[in-house]
Amino acid sequence: MKRMVLAGMAAALVLAAGGARADTASYKIGWIASFSGVGSAWSESGTRGLQLAVDKINAENLAGKPVAFVTADDAGDPRTAAEVCSRLVLQDKVDAIVGFEPTPARLACNQAAMKAGIPYVAATGTAGDICFANMITDGMISNQLIDPIVSYFAKHGAKRFYLIGSDYSTPRGTMKLARAVIEKAGDQVVGESFTPMQTADFGAVFAKIAEAKPDAILVNVVGTDDLTFHKQASADPRVASIPRGDLLLFESVARVLGPAGKGIIAVGGYFATIDSPANAAFKAAFAKRYGEKLAPDANSVNAYNGMMVLAAALKTGKGDAKATMAALTSAKIDGPNGPLAIVDRYAAQSSYIGRAVGDGSIAVIDHTAPISPVVKCKK
Image 1 (cartoon, rainbow, N blue to C red):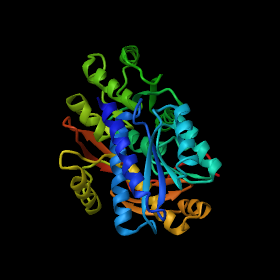
Image 2: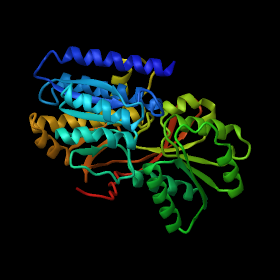
Image 3: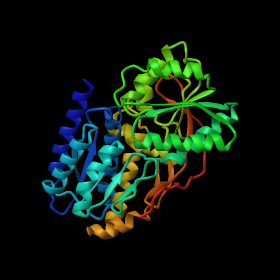
């Protein structure tokens, strides 16, 4: 049913964008996300954030001329991503792509964008090790997540950590950094597991965790697998009482978890409970468009910020792809989560620590000043 809803949303957005494209003086943006597959848990929220940004951009002429967008589904699959992104570039002739994709699909999609010489804005995080001349990333990267959450658990007495992530490059890179940070502080990683995408049963991992007896579990499991992990962990007496810290727990995921998520410590670039005028205005606009029952989360804000950064660069570049890409490398905006500045093609921004309440909300319990991205490659 969820996949049907997401697919319907995608189709509706294509029609809406197509109508706006009747104005040939508009910019046409490709919006690619995993409306089906393992990333579907996040894509609906991301799409709402992108649409809200487009509303504001067009109302205030922030890009210099109107913006329309065409939606594509990568199904969380690199081969599909390559196919649909080629369509966006060659058939739809988009001026830029905003991607809400897992790393393997993102890399496949960007091949088409690079060949066409157009910008790709990644609205999700990475390990900070993906650098292309045409790509900027506004999501959180490893050091902006690991340093704050390890520090939080250390302050609360944790010295023994178990690490678990999905089995591909970004989670592995992130957990490699986690190990380095933990061991530098004189603490210990007592175990580590990487699980295939779409893992249905984490029982074997729980057995390893129970045997290792950690003080805390750091989780970097992606998409719908994150839901499965936490639901099973909260019901498994071997691990249910061990504190969990999650690098990818968004409110959209917490709402599905409900009571099963209560007490999980989350770290990210945004939670809806941030107390600031900018976030209050963002939430008011979100509620006006989508109703009071829906709330934004980090996925909404990443997509929103990514589109706002692109709009600013489009206005500076005046439609020239090279000028737009150059403007992206030093773009700055004030987002719902505070100031954001692109540095080395990644975003310097604040990190927030939250605790899942169990009703779908995540209460902010700490935050940092903007943290510069530690990037492992530069181009």
